[in-house]
Image (tube, rainbow, N blue to C red; front, side, top):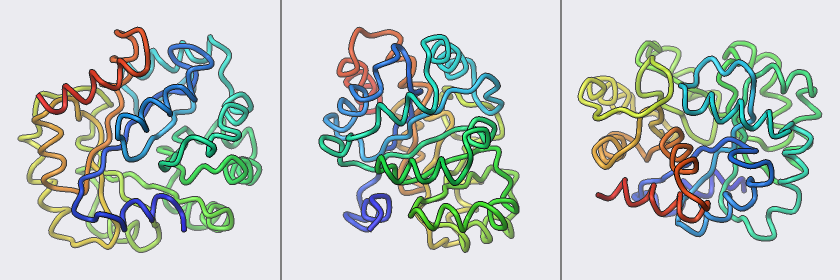
Length: 257
């Protein structure tokens, strides 16, 4: 069974924490050490970002990380090399998150085959239109047992959300607001949106991302969904600390205090 499916079927009442980081940041060869540190810290799932020169949905922290990663020499070929053999020590689900352009240049089926080869569990492609996914990309992703995670926002209609729920597996990525990634103090304005999605009683689990950065936002996200996704907060921790282990400890401490 796909590791993402297994994660959500086990301990269903336990809220899940997924953490995003940009491959090749702060240093080119940091990918595996960061994966290991997150796993040892108790994180349930990891999203590895593929750096891109025009990350339209990302705020300044992740944009800066992507720019530095590209300067460091990160590429898809390099990333797959870093992930090869990771299952000797990494057992939690690993998702690749990136924009369609570099994946398209690599070749989508070739990309999926390589993901299967290195034991990646799922994909998040924020700029992949849902209709194109259904018509062209879903059969390929299914062939390689890759869960394609789709994003919804407060502006997404119930009809579209229910279609996404029907045609995807894994989990639904609930973007907390229509703004870019980055820290927010609280989710007071988002609660009506969270309640609306909760009332749909979707079959897929839901994780809230964008803006989760402290105890209050983390607990609110978990109250209205199956867990939370943290990106910018962890990238900032990586920038401000000397080791991946220290960055993970700081992140977890900030979520608890």
